[in-house]
Image (cartoon, rainbow, N blue to C red; front, side, top):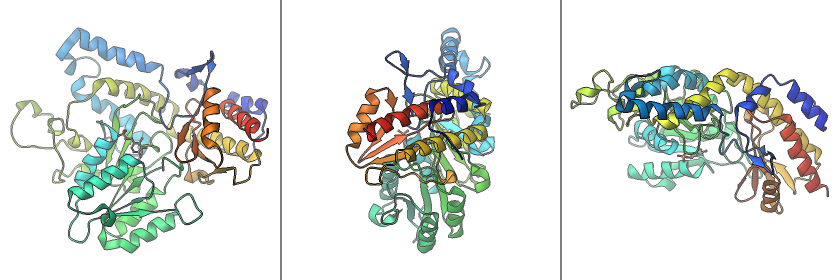
Length: 423
Ligand SMILES: *Cc1c(COP(=O)(O)O)cnc(C)c1O
């Protein structure tokens, strides 16, 4: 890819961007009366302008129909989750019956671990990435303890090699093979939250299955960011949140994928609730749980319509833009960010990009390791209308999302860094 470090070039790229109109579909936070350079969609995505009307629609329905809203209107609440399944499936490369939107991420991770972490004999260990998002670490730790094991023994972490920041697929695969018969489950991020590294989910799944273990992913940083083929990759289960790249609001609902070979198996142990019970007989209120076929059979409670309405509005924009098109833009936009950082000519001791350089191993986030006064640089950026995030001990995460960020955003960020480092 060839790029130029000029505002005119950045603007010409925006002009030529077939997805440029999507920015207007989002509210851009303001700073001194101007659009911020919002590079934080990896933490909380921006609000689609259509979200308010979608929410209002359900509020009106509730006001006007009360309980009747469960069964009337365009999207009756009773089956609201089903209206989200096709777009959700397209986003992660699944069949509609393999996905369901419900609860929140860590809750869903626990539900999946109940079903898919079932230690037996000496096969009781979980392999994960070192430095996984803390909620995932706590979930795994508490699950192995719940089954009577010690986390130090039952959780195997794969770490980067000395002097490296990211994991090598061969190291993940070798560790899986090395622990072979002890492994019950491989469960890791699809994209590491700290480094932005995209893991080779297909290869990891294959390696896990090769030793007789199951394999699941937390896609919090992958969903809406990278293209995936969960069904074809044969992943057993996955979970993700919808408030990061999926722009569905703080604390928003969450998505779940369960491969059809499990999803259609009523024998899979699970924690059950009435919303996972066969909907044709749900209101007979009888004893004896019969799961709905597909991922729907893991639902516990009746759907959270308000966050789901926001999510539905957001998914419509993803469908309109197309995740493949977003991905194509993302590669260039992130490539441009990388180019501008290289132009700074900083020694590794001052500024280092720890996200992999290969486009297939990263999404739209670059993690900048700032060795000196990183926190101060981060705060200066924030005070000047650049919204990013800081992760201890010394990383600034920068995420130009293809949905609403522009080449000009990235250029402005590059200019700011240039002024900072070359003063
Ligand atoms: C953001 C994130 C979470 C947050 O969990 P919630 O249950 O949504 O609060 C968990 N895991 C990963 C990998 C994340 O990136």
